[in-house]
Image (cartoon, rainbow, N blue to C red; front, side):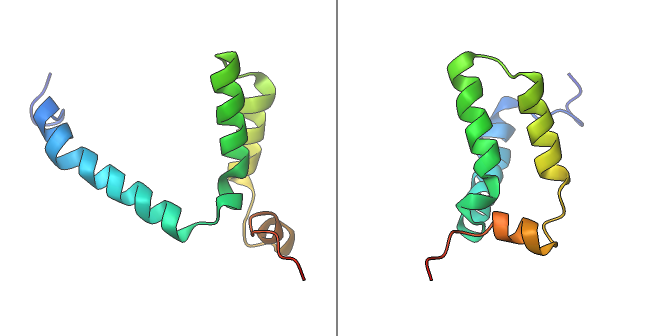
Length: 83
């Protein structure tokens, strides 16, 4: 282990982990649940089955490659509005 490039366990616990937790909380607070719906569904399916299939991997690749700036992709990632 290189102490310059690889953090020690106590650094991960006291310095790195709190930053990651804070970033995750900020992300969840500022992002619609609908945005990561595909990721959540695939994660649940993988947890139940214990593996990822080719279609799961393909769906994740496609979902993260979509441009959210298009009107139809924006509508997909927005919460459903009754109107």
